[in-house]
Length: 162
Ligand code: HEM
Image (cartoon, rainbow, N blue to C red; front, side, top):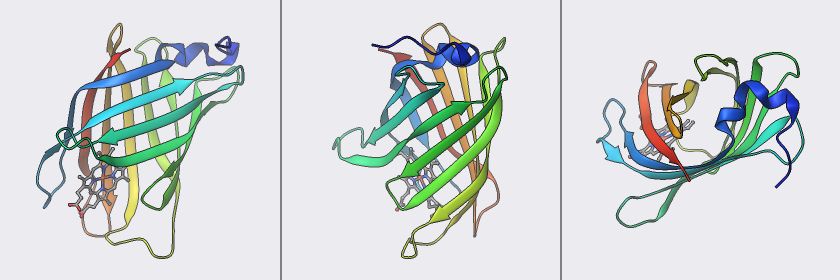
């Protein structure tokens, strides 16, 4: 594996592969659900982490929501941009920053685009929080707003580094 780029020092704690210990989904008017997810944040020598998220149904193991993208840092700062392509027909650009002391990232969508034939309700905004709870234990929390629903929690998951 390549070395982690020096510009990534503020988010070096995120690099690696993570697997859910507990993944909980919810949303107003949806049934609560559990999911299994693997995350990858991999540096191949560039000032960014290449990102993959693969979620599966915990019992049937069928693939669910998939994300592929890049977490970029503005070199010399704590400013972040997270660019993602989602398998259900959405692309998102999130922007925000990392607190390197707390080891906590906060991001808010700056841009969303969807395929013309995507199913409603459409996402209008989401926020993502990524924090290290303990060495090798990560938490991700995602809130979203749709056409029908104000900003509400959709995902809350705890991961172990593998
Ligand atoms: C439902 C968006 C991540 C599982 C939804 C809905 C939207 C949405 C817009 C429909 C809500 C409604 O009907 O009111 C997103 C976005 C995500 C995301 C923007 C990431 C940024 C995930 C992940 C999972 C997941 C990682 C993991 C399995 C589900 C499930 C439903 C759902 C199971 C209910 C589907 C149904 O009842 O047909 N999501 N989602 N989502 N999402 Fe997500």
